[in-house]
Length: 388
Image (cartoon, rainbow, N blue to C red; front, side):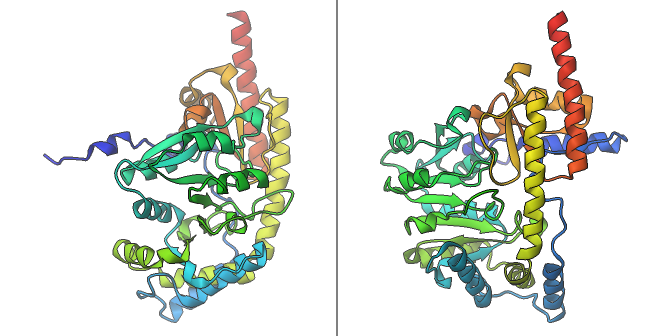
């Protein structure tokens, strides 16, 4: 018998993936499916990034490299952050690896002993709590509400802190809500005396107002960022962690044992992304904004109005509880009857139950068709309810 540790029983499935797999099965049967369940850009990776990777491969950049990342790449990342956020970040505080998910898991292994706690909002990104559990820690949830703009209350977070709290995790712009945290909220969280882990993977995808990194408020923080979202590089698996300098020996030791190093040639693609691809990605951002405004308007028209402003990332989080309290069952029924794939809100925590997450990382044409199908579905539900 192979014995599995008990804490893995608490690791939940990722419902967005479950819906995606069900949607692919329908497509295999010949059904027309519109995918609004995944947070994956539908735009191609910009050509300068492709070209840089091909050049690096041709030059034999396919070997182990520095465990923290090639020096010139870390210098480019530092310069990018310093210019964008007005920081004085040095390259020796940057670890490059194969995506932010791996780096978040590495960070939990770095910070947590068995029974240590990490404060998360509810709802929040589905995998955060599982990263904590896999490291032997305990996620502690602080509810956030649509009527408050899905903004965490620093005082509520303070009440959730115990002697075993090792970190507070925030994501801005947020998955699943698309909310950008207000500066006063970020300052309030940074003042609580607990390290803040700020997932800034959706930076670049905001629609009104300058972005603020947690590093502009405090150095007592960790930043995760990468190339999947803004630079449309999900499959390249390239991300980085910015950490307090005193932790360099521990971070390097842990990464050496887990990964040795990130792929060498892909790091040269990352250099090209930051140096050459921003104008292209800004065109992508403007198109996302156009889709956002259209989706918010259509959701209101079909009876799923938002009571908050989704001003970042590419998500809207719509309250559909009037059509059922089980968001998984509702999402599956919508998929089966309409061919529209949506993520059930409970995937993001108990506070997301009754909601559906819409991703507008799809074409305007497909989003329009998906909302037309959903409108017919909801009208049918209303008609059955009124006659039943």
